[in-house]
Amino acid sequence: MTDVVATNQTIIVVGGGISGMTAALEAAEAGKQVILLEKNPSLGGRVSQLYKYFPKLCFPTCGLEINLRRIKANKNLRVLTQAEVTGIDGASGDYTVSVKLSPRFVNANCTGCGECAKVVESEFPDEYNYGMKSRKGAYLPYNLAYPYQYVLDPAIVGTDEGAKAKAACKYGAIDLEMQEETVELKAGAVVYATGWKPYDANKIQPYGYDRFDNVITNVEFERMLDPFGPTGGKIQRADGSTPKNIAFIQCAGSRDVNHLEHCSRICCMASLKQTTYVQDQLGDEAKSTVYYIDIRAIDRFEDFYAKVQKNENVSFIKSKVANITAGKDGNVILNGNNLEVPGFGSDMRYANEHDLVVLATGMEPSIGDFPVEVVTDNHGFIQQDEANGGIFGCGVSADALDVNRAVQSATAAALRAVQVVNRVAGAEG
Image 1 (cartoon, rainbow, N blue to C red):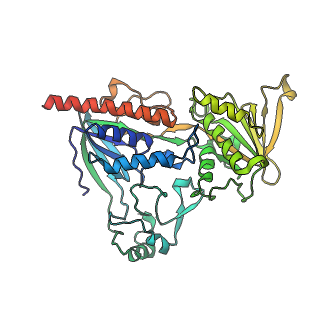
Image 2 (image 1 turned 30 degrees about the vertical axis):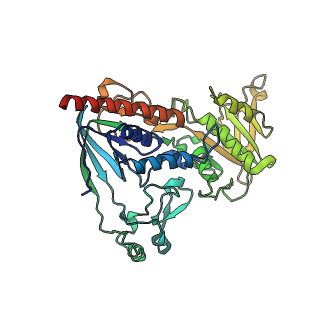
Image 3 (image 1 turned 90 degrees about the vertical axis):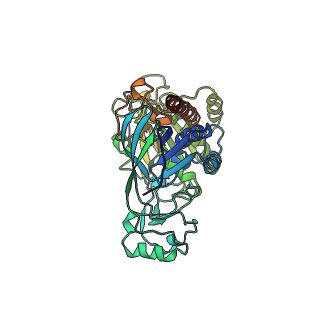
């Protein structure tokens, strides 16, 4: 069994993305015992999958590296990966949290040398790259993964591939006998920082994501720019050619009674940011067109929006694209009404051909089958409510937020959790 010590003065943080890491660190650096649970093999969450932040266009690896260094240095913080909460019993100040730990089949002896991956031939869709490329059956989740240990896909355990991986490891790090286990952890407070998932573009039938190879999502486009990503950092079409005329469709499935009714807040800025990728890599050879309902670039983001507007290679069309149809040579045609064109009917209609389309799909809270009843809003976000007791949502499990606001939300949730365990300590003292 995994050796984990927890009491009713422990704070459990569920989710190891930017919000979860922030909440865990703030509580641990305030002197509280914290256990950070992440269902994936490594920390980082969606932020680790970004190419750059807006509006400064810096790389997320910098902030992640700083947080990981803080985590490694803090003795109050314990990290469990491949850990999924299956139940929460009790009340504020006295919870029992059931956690399922899936086997990694690699132990702490792993040095990240990669010899196991060299001998394994089996390949599987790479979850980190949204299935846009394959990974080996023995793999490192991504180049800055923490813990920096390889993982064996369960499909190769018990096969010749698994045996080859074990034989290749000279450090004795491959453990094919690892089993799933369940641990019961005590906690005084629980912070849910389970983040978000991109809205399923297959559900937006008029946009043909499931039919057209050159219709992709904004998160896929983001991975495309990463030098470690599916295209080695190159913006390209499905056939490997370079696009010259790229469309960015805002609110793809958002602010729509048939899909997500809420605004995800990040999509406008994400698309504006991505037009800079096009400019930086392809220069004046490529044009970007942003189809938008309205651009939500408030406060410090307004200057960034104004800078993109000045770029002669970026144009804006105020329109909710009606549908996408097939063009020639793998291109697609966007159909709709331009609301900034004077007149009615045919004067406003367009049928614009593009060789690549990027859908700005919205954010859904990724809380899954929540193991205990909590108060949520109409969109599934966890609400701050006394009825939730000592369970707090933060980051995008609590609202659609950008990274900056998600970090602020996480800090606030950590402080609320600290107050709960302080009351427990006071009552027991």
